[in-house]
Image (cartoon, rainbow, N blue to C red):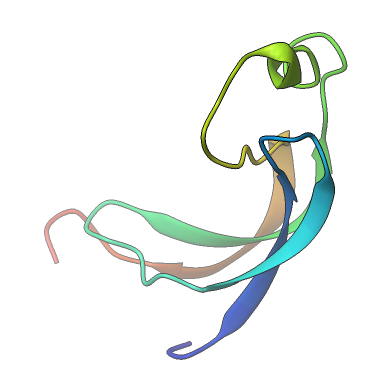
Amino acid sequence: MSNQIARRIAVTPNNHVEIEEFPVPKPGKGQVLIKTISTLISAGTELGSQEQKRDGNIYTGYSNAGEIIAAQMPNG
């Protein structure tokens, strides 16, 4: 799993949509790493947030369905 690169959709401050690559993080204690198969975008909440002034990218999507590919137990 180390040194893997993933892709995500980023909406830039000037409202351009880009595909961005990023390193896949290892899960911390009590976390899981999920490879997203499908996600939703809310036209009301997420797309409406583009109208707000911001300095960084936003990453849309919620209600993910995917496959757990790594996990770290809270006590282990």
